[in-house]
Amino acid sequence: MAEALTVLGPIPARELGVTITHEHLLIDFRCRYTGSPESEAIGEPFDPRDRWRLVREPAAFEANLLRRDLDAACDEVNSYKRAGGSTIVDATTEGLGPDANALRRIAERTGAHIIASSGIYVHRSHADRVHRSTVGELADRMIRDIVNPADGIPRGFIGEIGVDGPAPCELKVVRAAAVAQRQTGAPVSLHLLAGVLPEARAGALEAIDTYIKAGGDPEMLIAGHHDGSGDDPEYQDRILDRGITLEYDTFGFESVFAREGRFVQLPTDSRRVTEVADLWQRGWGSQVVLSQDVCYRMMTREWGGWGIAHILDSMKPRFAAAGIGESELRVMMVDTPARLLAFA
Image (cartoon, rainbow, N blue to C red; front, side):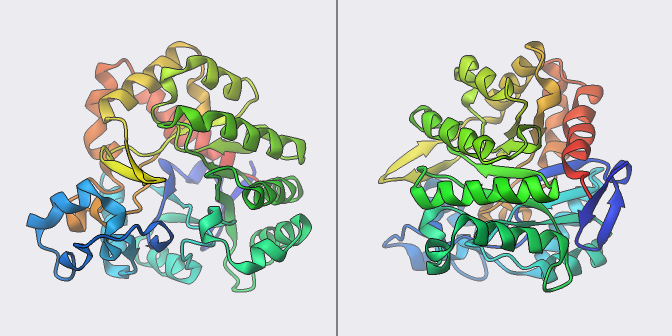
């Protein structure tokens, strides 16, 4: 069997175990900062009486957008391991402050399998270098991250590749990710807004088709952030018919996010469970993976959130009530992730 590339080196896919495919153990999320007259109200130490401010407007507070504490990250990972988790894909790409060395230290301290990522986030986070570079130059950097990383820490994943618009530079990065995927065999994940924004679905399909036309393997592509897309089964079918995997990856996050001056309400976990159950009933269960995308600090247990153990600790009875038992969860959290991550 092919191997997966963790920050501590390759391991057989059968050893990955329970896997969450989209998390951020450490992150600099300030590219999403919106600002607020109350920005200074949140600081250290965190006062739980201020949590309502973060829930109301998560991106308005810089303290909510920075997670650099190694001890806090290890606490999150240990809670996940106690709940039965084994592997974490850290989808923190360029533009979000990736730190592969820190991920390696977390893996050494916790014993978890951690997979680091290569790639570039959304347009608003792009450095000048991204705009100047060709598709080939961007692809070469992703390939080096996987096969010959400068820091000696292999990346076993490409993404999340940011697609907000898609802007032209975002589509350039998508093409580069497809080239890197074709050269290395690594899985790719796209950050898409098509779950909660029906008007973003045409752009999501454009990005997916751009990836495929550039030579990327659709069976190694994860379409991220599709919680809420179940209101349009025809749209889901168009993606799934291509062989792509849908990711329901914001479990536990039922708040809002800012989008071009307006606030977008995220689905409830109940709706997420209902939509995943419907995908199983329609025969697509083996093309679904699950995660929580803990990015804001308020989503961690340190600041009163559900944390990365939420699906394992809290959601199993709710899945079971919807007809999704241990065998279905194993497909979505063990078998399908192992298929996607085993390429080395």
